[in-house]
Amino acid sequence: MEKLKYERPVINRIQSGLPDKFGAKFVLEAKTEIEGHLVKDLLAEYGSPVYVLSEIVIRDTYRELLQAFSTRYQKVQMAWSYKTNYLDAVCRIFHQEGSWAEVVSWFEYEKALSNDVDPRNIIFNGPYKTAEELKSAIQKGSLIHVDHFDELYQIIQLSKELPEKARLAIRINMNTGIYPQWERFGFNYENGEAWNAVNRIMNTENVELVGLHTHIGTYIMSVSAYSVAAAKLADLAVRTERKYSHKIRYIDMGGGFATRNTLKGAYLPGTDTCPTFDDYAEAITGALLNSEIKPEDMPLLILETGRALIDDAGYLLGSVVANKRMASGQRGMIINIGVNHLFTSFWYEHTIIPGVPVNDDSEDTQICGPLCMNIDIIRQAVRFPLLQPGDPVVIERIGAYNMTQWLQFITYRPKIVLLGSDGEVYVIRENESLETFKAQESVPDYLKCV
Ligand SMILES: *Cc1c(COP(=O)(O)O)cnc(C)c1O
Image (cartoon, rainbow, N blue to C red):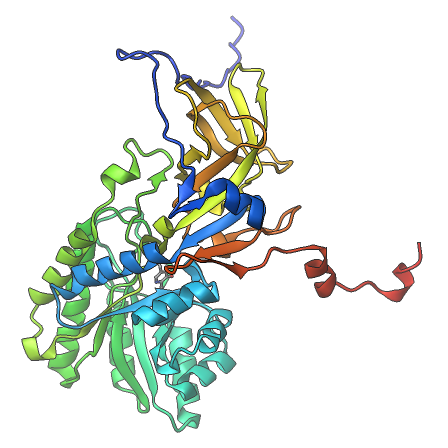
């Protein structure tokens, strides 16, 4: 008998939109205004699409987080994670609130300096720092978080030639019981690498070990992972004190708190599953207080929270371009917001809301962007009411990473406005135009005649 041909298995999506036991009714509230500013007015005034950030939400979220930690622990310091959103206006709000700067590149370092951050309050993280950058950071007294041994040896070499004492912390990766375990950055705890780095620094002149740092991952929903991490850093601090009578001045727990956005593939919405700031604070401060560190030696607790501090403050407003019926029967809705403007749509099921009042009829809809690219999909399948071309849409919780990881691909980046706590609207970044690109490019003379 002839061998049968292999046929690959196919998984077909069951389209939503069929009636459940309550029927097919589904109501999506429209969002027609943000803090008293009409969505349609913002679009008319500043163009479509437009990014909107709320100063009130940024400050309220910051204060809520700080309060959760400082009611449980004496010494807490925030350091704003520049890569999450490095718009100057945003950084300055955090700095006004008392945040230091946490940077992962020289570009961000320079931005922090230009935002008048005291260089001694800049945490210089990341796996790539050139000799020039390290030298400059040592001279300015910044906190350098060492990522690997080659970097440590380079710093030791540099500090032989410099009068300033380098202020160092080591970044540590570890098993906190979560998967995947981030192991790319820093020195490993379990295999003794981190302790080895501590000993090397403690046996070198003109460098000082001021802190211990970890950043266990991002969007971490398990608060217990943070207590494991804090306990392990505390343990290293205790061993350093025992062996060298040297007190570690700070423990930096990095960022990684989840937000209320829903991850792709998540069963429940992020609004239901996201731990509170109190949950994280309880886990981290509990582990520190329960450690062997003596009360008078308790280190400063630094947090580099990024996405959880700014996601909720950001909105992306845009407009419907067209509706179409796809061959599968599913409705398609094209909007003028693409994945170039919404980088986080690769891992979040973003909440999209009509910007005009709608009726109760909704249908399973694929929402795509305007890019001529098959992957430009904002939502694969979502119950959505019928909007007409030109109608506004609002995408919520987009404040983190979209204004730094955005792509310029085939179009100009739009304006970013800040809704000030004074009720005014401020343009904090202009839209790009052809001139933006002309200014960057040049054409060799022989190509100028056509
Ligand atoms: C990105 C990053 C942060 C911020 O992380 P979130 O997950 O956005 O909170 C903090 N620290 C370091 C070292 C980072 O690389």
